[in-house]
Image: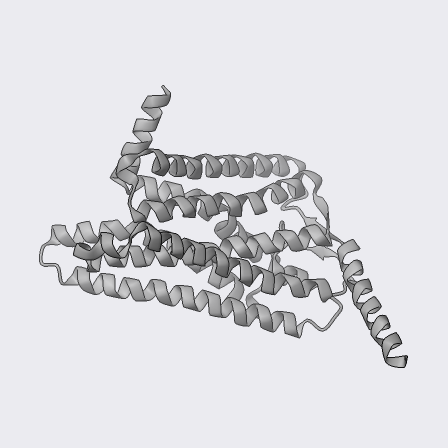
Length: 323
């Protein structure tokens, strides 16, 4: 009888903790308190968001409608563009609200949901980038067997695997947030609900959450980065064996766009999360977050379209059809 009562009380405490977390509200801070600067920032980031949607949407449409873009490289590029649209849509509307309202109130449930989709989008994107690196490796190092290796079934499996890893990584780090209690400051000095910002506000012992985030994030980041770097080691060694300068340039040009995107995404992301705590500041965190979550999705379609003749030809064809 005593054990049954203790079990029921334990369940009740667990439910009360989850209800407390669900009913808690966070306050997201805007980027500036000056009215004229707020108008400028709102207009700027709204334009960036619209250009991001249009640019990535045009890439997806071009890949879907152009017969000469039906290759594995453009298949992955289409999925990368979709992810960039998702990533921006998770973060930018929330930022725009904080700029207008100066301080946006968001429930814990909404905050945890936003954190889940941020982790899902970012993790899926790094593995899509790894898949694109393997695709370039196959094209440069094994050109005679390229279409056999990178068949459509295998490409779909790579994309599905990226989404599955992203989903379980986001779920693994988001579900433990439901067990946390928040009883102190509710101010998140950021424009979105990123996981470290949420954990830092809890009045529980968050060592388990921090270790889980660090270990799982480190594993995901290192595995995806290792696969990407390994592919480029083989690519570079193969390019150096090409005798003609023109052949080397042509081989490297097929990888330059992807390599630029990888450096932008990994560089800012790793620096943001792996730098020492002594180098942490609200302004630096905000600038880095803007770079990898807002500017990188905008730059991806620009990078791929400016350095790709086939993509530029597809865009010109689409514009002629519209006109």
